[in-house]
Amino acid sequence: MSTSSTGGPPASAATQPVPERDIAFQLLLLQQKLGALDRLYNEEVGALHHDLTQLKAEYVRQVQAQREGAPSKPSRQEKKTAKGSRRKSSPGETGKPSPRNAGAAS
Figure (cartoon, rainbow, N blue to C red):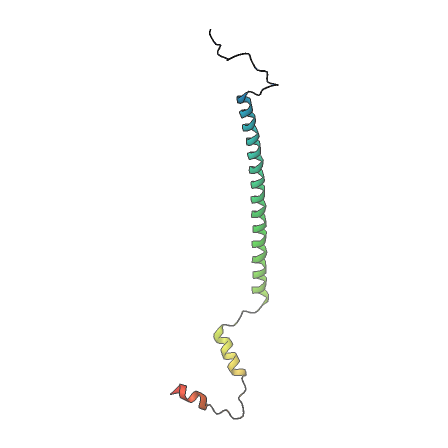
């Protein structure tokens, strides 16, 4: 008895899916899903780049406005000098080291 190459009676597509069609359908669905995810990713990345660019521009505008409107900040040395010149001496201050600091100076 010889067997045919199909292995029996042909199966109808309605009752039993052909494996090749099922795989092709799954591939098509996955490609569509991948395309949709790729578009969504690109939209999100574009929106993030846009937001980042706007924030950078706003930061630069604020820094420039501060530099133009506010006087420059004095250096630390200028602050120390300014504090020393405003300091009032107490009535008993003579410029000599106090007894507490006398040992440290020696």
